[in-house]
Amino acid sequence: MFDIKSFYEASSVEDAIRALSADPDSLVISGGTDVLIRVREGRDAGKGLVSIHNIPELKGVDMKENGDIVIGPATSFSHITNDEIIKKHLNMLGEAVDQVGGPQVRNTATIGGNVCNGATSADSASTLCTLNAVLTLAGPNGSRDVPITEFYTGPGRTVRKQNEVCTAITIRKEDYEGWEGHYIKYGKRNAMEIATLGCAVRVKLSSDKTKLEDARLAYGVAAPTPIRCPGAEEALRGCALSDSSIYDRFAAAALTEVNPRTSWRASREFRLQLIKELAKRALKESIRLAGGETDA
Image (cartoon, rainbow, N blue to C red; front, side, top):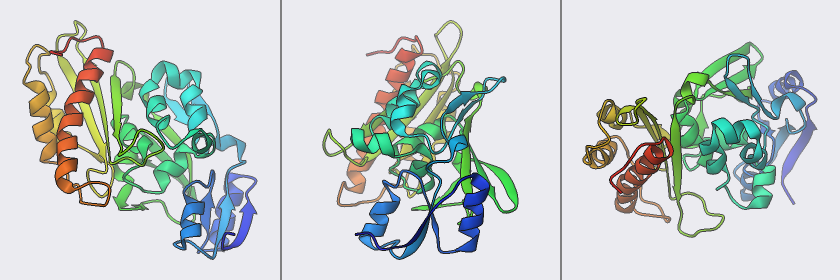
């Protein structure tokens, strides 16, 4: 049994905001794969739940006329992975969320919940960071857009207010067109495992596929929140792919920007080793996917 004070099924975003505002101690629930665990463990026991799970406008993937891609936060991971727009333009994101839990979890869990729970281990978060995703939050005073790189404030904490609902995750055309990327998740076992470390890399190559015009690097579990590594990204801009030292330089720069901790899953020292190694592996695979040649 779950210790829940009340459960309200919202019929619209406005209805959900009203219900959340009426009970300042209530929580948003969609798929419930995170919220219900916290309730069962006692961390959020005795609270009211406001469900946004069956609000149609919060589900699905859509491409706007300007090429921007909008993902509904109540869209399940399995729908994202199998969506034609995602497979054609954001396959990296589809592959990343396909590593969450097992099939039952992916059929239920939503991308909005994965982001809004604030966990640094969220498999979608680091990839969305490299995509410069923008979250739209709706509340009693209207809507506001927040870049995902400014969304997290600490472990399990975000800028979303208690009575705000995430209504859209937007990825602009310029942040995916011409880019390729790869996400690597390291876990203690190859099955339904929370990430010990997650590494996402995206690259944009020159038209002749010989130089790195731009690069992005983000991690999960390398700091208290998902993080981007701007110094490592800057170190690669304009570099020739023929320069075999780019991988070591990329990894070395990343090490100066992270702050992993020791936990029962892994020591800080082991995570630092993963940060270095996964950056190099993800960079090589991203370059290969973009049509460039690597030294391996």
